Image (cartoon, rainbow over all chains, first blue to last red; front, side):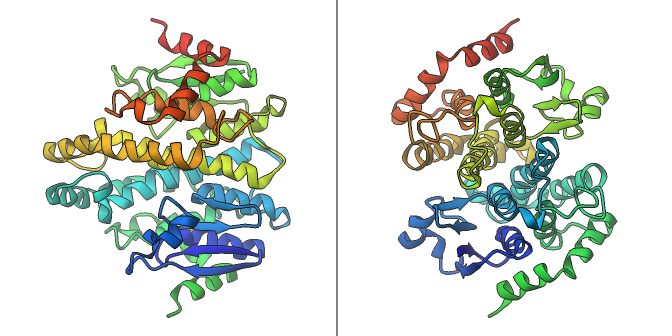
Length: 207
Length: 207
């Protein structure tokens, strides 16, 4: 039985959906950013980085979405969530998840978490102004160069798909025009009707 | 025969060392940032993101350091560059490489590449001022919570090691006091005497 520490509206949703896709036994434990629960001694003992998600396993604790997604895929090979027997295809999956975490998620974070990299209110405002442009550039890269369709990697659904879906949820908040990226929009709609996505969202949006 | 596109002083060094560690046949091809070669049509045809590194393989082109490192480890299992038969231990390796790419490298990038996330000179100056603090916090996290010693993952050298070594090369430029992180310093010294590191550095520092 895994324990997934998550906060609604964060990238933890990607791993949450992947756990559902894998049919893995897990308990979802909500961490409230509003009460700064991620910075309490209790949570820092789980994840000293003070971030979500964290995945508690029998072997120890894992963090970082790309690592957790690959772990879920490798732990439940029957679910076929990644091309595990082909290092090149697996690397293509990882190149995608790595791009999402190190470029797309980071561009997004400059809207509300500029304090990670600067101190002045004028810098935060400058960063916020640029987010629609940087995020649109990221989505154009994905739309034109990465998303093969119908799933990110083509015919086979993989761990790339819940991760893209999770970040695409932020489009409106980031003032990105969804209509400009029709293939990502189709992918989003395709995800919304999956049972795994519905179950994870039901848990995360419950009161 | 792989082709590794690299620029000296970048994170491409991590994959370059890993290729040497693996004993993989490769050709190293230098991309000059000074002449903006990463933005030429020729290079964008290889990597539309206009970044280094890129790894050209017989199957296609890979980007993103964590993906390339895992690919090198999986393609040359005899080199034992990752715990390939243990999904949990492999995920620990990946959590480390993911942290380096999405937190440490990103904190560093705010010193010279603030234009990725803002437009004003005052914002760039604000970002630059914060880099010693953010990078020191990253190195404290690694020193205290991640680096097991003698190698990152303990007794076994893995793909984590060339990646940490590569980023640790930036400490002085980022105004981080190396003396504050003695275990990372010892790791750095341990890396500097490896043949794979010397060979990769010799290629990258050649005129």
